[in-house]
Amino acid sequence: MPSDEFVESNPLLDDPPALRSRMRDEGYLFFRGIGPKEKLLAARRDVIALCREARWCDGDGRWTGVGPFTEGDREYMAVYQKVIKLPSFLAVPEDRVFMKLIGNIIGGEAMLHRLRIGRITFPNNVQQTTAAHQDHWYIRGAPDTYTIWQPLGECPRELGGLALLPRSQKNGFIEHRFQAEKKYAGHGLQDDQIPAASQDQWLTADFGVGDFLVFHSFTIHKALPNLTRDRLRISTDNRYQRAGDAIAEISTKSHYNL
Image 1 (cartoon, rainbow, N blue to C red):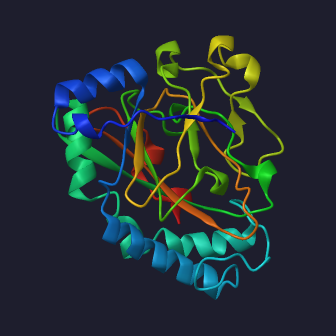
Image 2: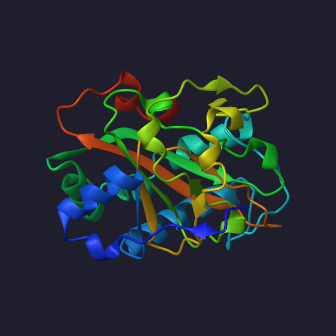
C-alpha cells in the first residue's frame, strides 16, 4: 500500500495561476476539509439508509456479511439505481466550492457532467478493486476534463481510498487493456504500461470528511482495496470541464442510464 502522501493545495486555493501551475506540473490537487461537510454527511446518511434497507449494513454502516456485491451484480444495481437519484447525492458535486475551484483551474466557466458516479465498496472483495487507469478511457471528450474524487465520510487508506501517480498525465493517453476478471471498469493499465520510474511513486492519504482530490483525465490512478473487516467504503467521483468544450455522449447521461 502506498505510504507517500499527497501534497496539500489549500494554501493555493485563492491563487488561480498557482492552482493551474501545480495541476499542469503534478496532474492533481489535494484539499483538506474544504468540501461541503453537511452535504457530504447528508448524502452518506441517505446512501447508508438504502444499504441498510438492502440488509448490507447496520445504521452505522457496518457490513452485515451479505454479499459482497459490486457493479454488474443484480443486487448491487438494484440499490445503485436508487443511490444516483438521491437529491442529497446529486447536490454534492453541484456545490459552489467545486464549481468555483474548477472554474479557477480552467480559467473559465465550469460545466459539471451529468454522469455522476457513486461507489459502494465491500470488504472481502479485493479482486474487484478498480485497477490503474486514466479516466479519459471512459469519458472521452475534451482531454482537459477533471475528476473530483471524495469519500462520503471518513476514509482511512485501509478502507480503500484512492492512489495516484503524480506527473503521469505528461505521458499522454495510453491505450487500455481488457481485464476479464473485473465485473466493471474492465479496462485498465498493467504494470508494463506504466513507466518503470513511476512504479514506486504512488501517492495516497487518509481522507477526512471534506477532503477531496482533483486530477486531470490523463492522470493515472487506482482504488486501494477495502481491507477492513466490516466497513463499507462509500465515495463519489464527478467530472468537470470548460463549458463549450467537446463532450462525449456518455457524459451527458446518468450512470448506466438509470
